[in-house]
Length: 140
Image 1 (cartoon, one colour):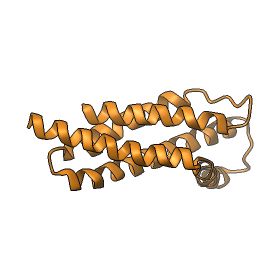
Image 2 (spheres, one colour):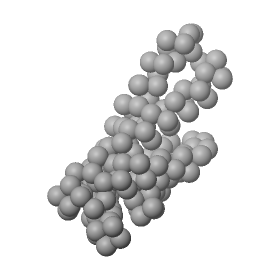
Image 3 (tube, rainbow, N blue to C red):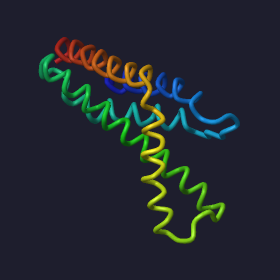
C-alpha cells in the first residue's frame, strides 16, 4: 500500500512538471489521472512485493518501479493519442497507426528528458523505495 501511495504521488507530481512542456491549448484529457493510476499500479505490483528485502535491493526495485511506471505511462498515453488521431481519420491504415504509437512514445519520452523531471523521477523513486523498505521491515 505504501508503495502504491508513494509511486502514485511521484507520478502525480511529475505529471505536474510535464504539463507545461506541451504546446498551449493541448487537450490532455485524463493525462494526470492516468499517470497517477499507473504510478499506483507500479508501486503496488513492482515495489510493494519486494519490500523487506534490504536497502540495497530497495535501490534496485525503486529504479525498476520507475522504469516500469514511465514505460507504461509513455505507452498508454501514446496509444491514447493514436486512438484520438485515428478517430479523426489521420491514418491511411492500421500499420501507420501502430507505427505512430512508437513515434509518439519516443517524442514524449524525449520531451521528458529535462534535468528537473529526470532528477525528480530518480531521487523520488529511490527515496520512495527507501521508505517502502523501512516500512516493510517494520511490518513484516
